[in-house]
Image (cartoon, rainbow, N blue to C red):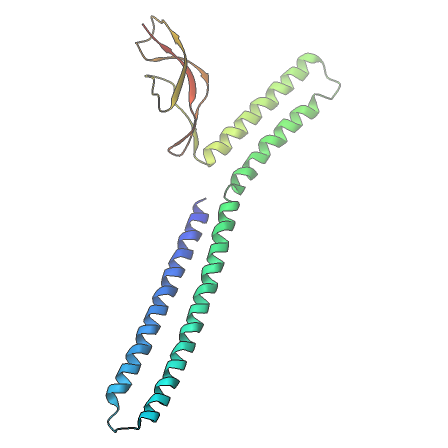
Length: 199
């Protein structure tokens, strides 16, 4: 995801540079026209002046239109790349989840063999444990972490579904976790479902 953000930032820098070049070129052309006007010493006829100014104006317009067209092309390309980066932002995460799916499918295929129920149950448990481990590895890789459920209740990250009277816990402290909660970096994906102590 960092690569996509860097690419979008680089694209925005290119747009800024092209805009600055267009402004610089326009200013230079205007400055050249003014300088050439000042440098003229002899008095040409008004028709000569008009023809010369029209030629310079046409040349300046041509330069401007070429630079503007280049700028528009770069802008369209960067816009297209930005949307492609957004569309495929979760590609890496999806690839990392494929291992977990493979593990689940292997666990299911092992259940179709001619095994004793105790061996089968052991293999299925092993497959499920490996799948959970693969999920946790993928989550860690993509900055997804568990919501802490030790300590005091926090309504921003916890969802209290039960209130219990507990001698082992202080008032408004979490007694048990009923469902895990997850954070993506600093953003809450799902609140942890907990029971809290109320005295």
